[in-house]
Length: 156
View: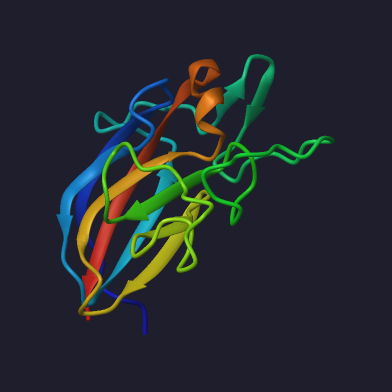
């Protein structure tokens, strides 16, 4: 059975140097499914790009790009360089903590989004929702482009 999705909002995510994480929602409660989709139309139904650039001359879609050289220091190792990623909990300034034994972000949930993602939130999963491009913090000054993201929910 297909869930009856309820639109939360349509976001415009600009690839900028700061902040590292863009606030998509101040608070998302638990016990629901979230569907995140990169769309090709803005709120006025105008056609928009579905690519962005982690570095000048390298365009990629929200799924990221494979590189011949390994890119170190990415915000998450769970997604390709340049991919759209999300985070539930924390702040717009969070970076991975390599010394943490419980995970690089502690209790925060970091996940790959790409062009389409559905995540299940338990009752205890809640907090602000953030999006960004997967890159090392030092590379954010070279980003360009904009993605439009449709955020939907289905309470469980």
